[in-house]
Length: 371
Image 1 (tube, rainbow, N blue to C red):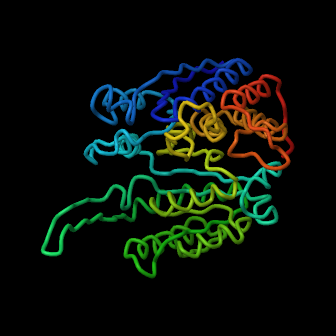
Image 2: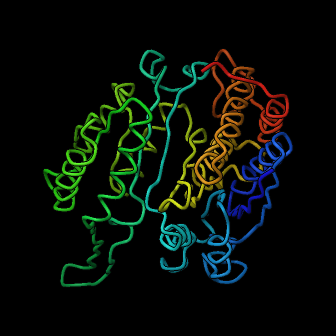
């Protein structure tokens, strides 16, 4: 039996709804495999602002540092749009990444055959897609110095984008190491024809790959070309590594391949601990979706698949992670999807909790999916 402490940050909007289903999945895994998971709630985002006046209370950060892993729902909502930018809910998300040293964001994009028709793209384009985007998470324009001044022409806004050699090296190593476990191909994405940070990115990435990963197939690609090829030929990609803002945008685009942004999980990881285990923050890539909050229709699958990543990367439980992924796959084949994933061959939409129940039942039943 393994004991693990997991900090749970439900957050705002649909966050508490999808996290509720993730809790059920963790309980099911613990019961089936004989583990004990201590789930401890904490505040972040708008909920934290309302409660204590800050998007990331120090108590939350300290609790996360003392945990084996962190599970997050979503942050933000229109009720906090008019408060000062430095204390908006999204600042809590940036601060926890920085505060925990989570510099590598792993975002897998897969398209189950059963859901190939749910995408707005042709089945022939999306079926069989299996790629991973590694997004650098603590550098770049999101964390750069910001200013708002005025001159004779009006207001002048500036956001500084900065990257260091060390920041680029470490995330490229994570991506190349992952590529070795997959199809052994890495694509580094930048804008080196325009940006100085991208020219540094390209030089550093090329050197790391030549010196440390000569066995991994490597190419670089401009971000605008990558955006096009993700839609035209997504099956050609294996692992993509890129800077913070480009990764944010490209993975939202890639959600179209899977049919819904509600399907995609993510893991934000720091340096490896003893045994290769990493502290991580796990969350679906979707936002708080305030327009559907409280209606019971949010897709919980991205959050549940984030639980699988939590089990694998922070707890070293690969068998348990596969059990969750298999349960999700079988539930989908059996037709258990929310309204965002319906299609002519699966017209019935289930609620958030009904999809969660279907997955939990299959974890408990020990189903196995075809790989």
